[in-house]
Image 1 (cartoon, helix red, strand yellow):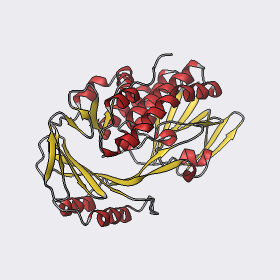
Image 2 (cartoon, one colour):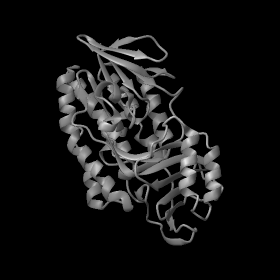
Image 3 (cartoon, helix red, strand yellow):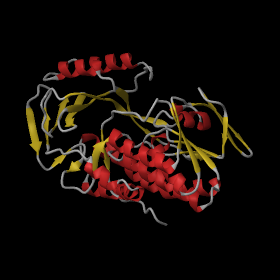
Length: 370
């Protein structure tokens, strides 16, 4: 039985590990965090990605955990309502759509459970330090655990992928900044929002607020437009100070919101960016999801890309009996047109929602069975 190391225990990594087990591989997931990460924004599962959830056996559960937004309001920088809608929200699209919006942590919990049931091995609180490809496999060095050899290694470790750095080179060769930065965190629902989403826009700054967990919590997504900024990816306090400075001029509830951000235990900050690469594999190493083809939150399709990419990669490895050269080539051939459609949404989506025609092509631009 061939063994595959998957770096990253989020949507792409968990989905890949589960389906590798289904195709007869041994799968090990290494994750830098001590457990599957909590927190995160509401994410969308659309089109063909819903079929992946169905085949994984969690579609009904995912539907049961979907958000229950009644609509949204757009405010100016002082909190005055510009317009509202009870038919759609920017984050999820049309409210009568069959697509699912749910919290990232709810989806990863479902995927983690399925992976555990399938017999996936998990190495939490650890991360890769070296990859040394040899004739019979890849020797992987870890920060905490002993060096181990795997037949294949897949990076499902996000925009700042360690696997991509080790196997392909520095990040700046592949990551393209899209002119904005974003932070996500959770807080009390101090605005008493009742299944209602609020967007505020003020010149170069914007944010979105919405309630979750039966309106007992609120998730906040704050952002500002900017050229690339040099900052420490590990320095959370620096990132909080940067976001606070960029939103200090905004009115309405912004001061309370920034106070909540400073106290948030699940603060996340990063640039709006995309990953563009000429190839997603080298030797025995491959990339899936944001590590290889991040479309950015502006596309609204990052989760769907992760689900579909992981499913297709596992399917091709299963089809070829673990012949990684053939499988990786087939994976790229099938996924690249789908990735192109979804990454293109980010440019169109910067002002709000993409057109119905563009979104429909992106949602369903690939067939799972070939």
